[in-house]
Amino acid sequence: GESVGLHLPTLSVQEGDNSIINCAYSNSASDYFIWYKQESGKGPQFIIDIRSNMDKRQGQRVTVLLNKTVKHLSLQIAATQPGDSAVYFCAENLGGYQKVTFGTGTKLQVIP
Amino acid sequence: NAGVTQTPKFQVLKTGQSMTLQCAQDMNHEYMSWYRQDPGMGLRLIHYSVGAGITDQGEVPNGYNVSRSTTEDFPLRLLSAAPSQTSVYFCASRSLSDTQYFGPGTRLTVL
Image (cartoon, rainbow over all chains, first blue to last red; front, side, top):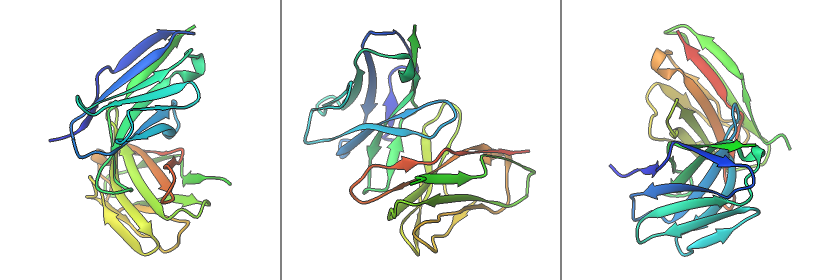
């Protein structure tokens, strides 16, 4: 079946470097994508979102890129900090506002 | 605002017991959802509600009931707990034009 997935389960990055977390999706009808950050023992926290009519969106230290041709989504974190250590989920919105399908997550480890 | 609150934080049940996980939000959000999160997996939608008195099933609804008598509260009931329901449960809410806000989670163990 169609699903949202992540390429790498764990990503280790040196503090100060940029991080790139990738996500593949297979439902061509998906038109809204979200990145969440989940710290240990906490609920997911919204980071940034993007609609399919855009290919790039920037926030504070984060950028999301969307390539609809290859159904690929990425989250870029600039100048990665220890506080960025967490699991990052991409998600796609299917079937209306309320139904969100999550990927399995990538664990980002920041090396001091 | 307290945001989305969940109680209890931890719970241990025996197989066959029933219980209710509480969820409340003070943001006047129309939409509320329940998810479960299992090790190495993404969150899966159990049930959701688009307003008071309206609920619908998500991806994994079996073994769970919900009701939405008020805008603020969205309890999740386990009718007869099974070990397969051992998981971390997250409640979330959102308005039509905003993103989802998640609660801190309830960690449930069924023996």
